[in-house]
Length: 148
Image (cartoon, rainbow, N blue to C red; front, side, top):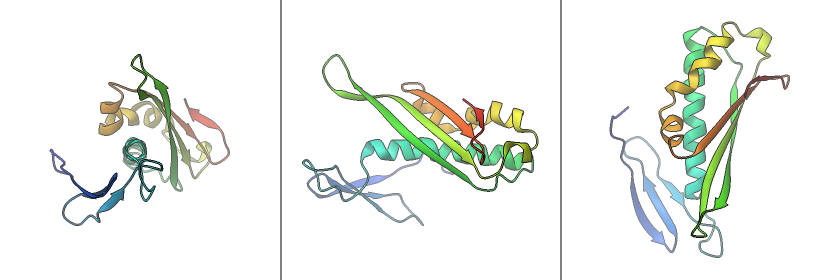
């Protein structure tokens, strides 16, 4: 991974922009929902949520792999909680990420050190957390809360 990731955005129409991620990555069309835009792509807030959740899943999978554990599939749901600031502007004040493991927690070994450390290796979530509260939970396939 490049130490200085770069993307280029080019306006297509109104609030619609095309994001060029560079070599070997398809472009992505982003937009605002009506009435500002046409709702033809994800919004910046959704891209932020996707980046945070994706980086956490990468870190969790990496930690599981280090301990030779197969999670049986992973999924995450990220939610932005918004409030208006003193100037009346909407701001994301908290992000919650709920990670789901495809196996039961009893089927996974070394779970305690994995759950304790994986967040520290998530570049995006740790960077975002410096300005936005972040709450992460992990649940197994049986609905048992393993973290958070």
